[in-house]
Image (cartoon, rainbow, N blue to C red; front, side, top):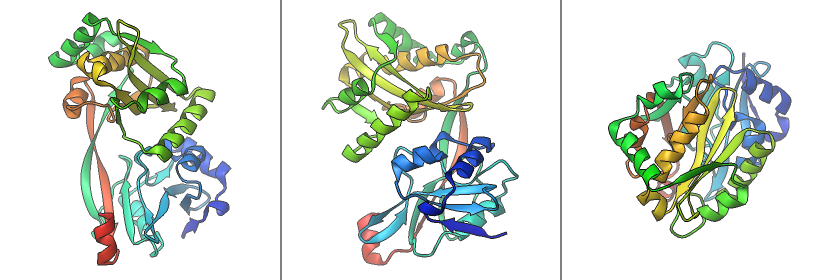
Length: 305
């Protein structure tokens, strides 16, 4: 059966979203509403009657169309509720039109890929199953993680759920705020649209950390779909960093969502010692693939890479 390449106006969004919703590896980042925010003219590869699908986010760079991973996207690739083999994933990438001479994608953890025409690197992601009680999960915290939580409590940090979109955006654009991911003006506008959608449909929560003087010092946006929760965006200022606010914020979020069949991904946490933070929170490490192909002329290679 042939894999079809579809322009945006050829995609059946109802069938697309049904596929993502039913896929065993479905993701909020692959729903049409989310892709529409990231790239108004996203394209798609489709096999069968939307049995297997793969979104294509693209943009022009120096008059060349490239495929790339958006900073607010996360682990795309092939999605399905059927058997997903390495051969099928390879077939999808072979079906990408040749006019895309630069491709850089981060694949979801269920996509195995070995095409030797691509540069392939391993990437570690960190997830935490929340099915256990808070007592059981917090016992898996490292000594330094627990120490930083206690430090935040001693500094009288208060965690609040229910911040507004404007609260998060205003805090994030302050000069002394450091965020992950770091966004430009266009991406901040896209983030605002994402927040509006997820809050309207109860797919997200915004947490904030306040100092003893009631000053906001850290913010975090969590988005959810089915049994997955992602820390999409977070930021802290110097005060929040010095008071270990983000440690208590993540701890409070975990405590509020335990004993549920949910998996939390916090790999985008804003921390100078990110891996230490993630392992200290008791997460499990998984390996995914980052792939890249650069067949641009030499002049363009120097400009893009």
